[in-house]
Picture 1 (tube, rainbow, N blue to C red):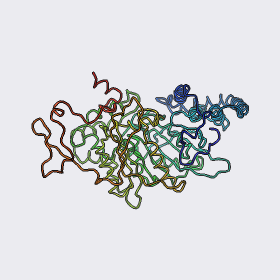
Picture 2: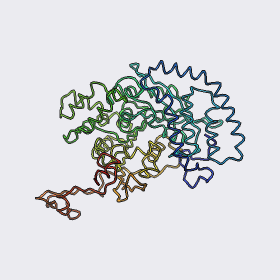
Picture 3: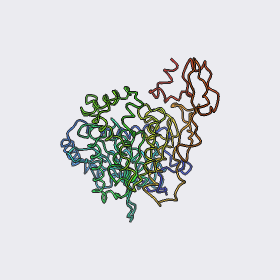
Picture 4: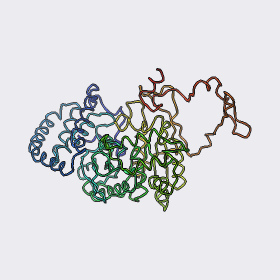
Length: 532
């Protein structure tokens, strides 16, 4: 949208001081435009695909397109005239809006629904909505269907950066599977942001969820085969999208994070993987240390139930989940878990000279994919030869990722560095040589608890960075229960770094830090529960 503003190729987020007053959208209009843009996009086929047949959808879209082509062409001409008139006098943000509208209408007219999606995202970027910033490359959107090996049709969207005049650039690719129970709009804002920064970003809905056909088999062989068909599509459409199929990363949150690493292990075309709130061992997630995770079992089962309307969980999944919870270690159950656990595919991912770079991010109060399990996952990857970066944040499952997915990394709850770290990881591994190499990232970044931390106000998080893990800077401590008090370690234990807590504190309550608002499983409600 609009002309580039000299934005570096490696980022789509210039410093705030680089933007003049005339480039800023009036703040009172930003929230309205955010919801209007997203509602505009959701009102079109992304929302209407669910429950409808593909043939009926495609026929309806074609019929609408035939009636709308001439109207859109006339409107495009009118917008271009307005653009020429205001170009000399309008403030930057107003010109950005006009340029965005003209930019997607003066191309070859596509299905109006696709144009609507592109319109919403171009408009959001033109007015600096959320994490988006004006400038960068113009972005073209395409909605497509990926057909898997068994004929299952999967819905996908792709954000495509446009070449500048006379340019012959090809762009690296990021493939993003959806999270458990989430739809095709999940990564829309990130797709727009990263495409403007020079990435082809394809998001697809895994089988059994929303508008994609089939049943959910919980990251099994069918889902991995689907992902490989998505990679085939990238290769087939590479010339249309100006994509470089030799530079592909997979990335996702939660279910999508697990699929991202499993896909990278199964297909050497993937050269880097990003797992955010993902898992390494599915048995450890559902029954870690022999403790059945009943709450998350019910959440996963309920959200995948067909009557809820988000997905269609295969009848084979719940019995296997129950077997894991019951401690069943039969050969069949163990094999089912191994197939779906990235830690069981380390040789494919890290061996044979691949040493696939992997970025892991998990949360300290995640009761599904717990932080200790994440650190074991990190050690398994590192030991097998993969290059691993790891971040551990405050918050429950996917809480560190959520603000950035909604486009508010710097506006809600925390000025989180997570998504900027993800983009830096992609730049380092998919755009080598495009910019001076940054300093080597730490092996592990661990967010500290802060008294001022809260979901109700913005704050700057503090991280401890470790160049290696385990680190000699971290020494374990152990305490023993003795009556109603905690006794200091005995001589055979490691030395106590400080006196134990007072006995009266331990007998009345368990305290491990101030209430951040992220704990207790209910991100926004725990402060109210604790005060009730």
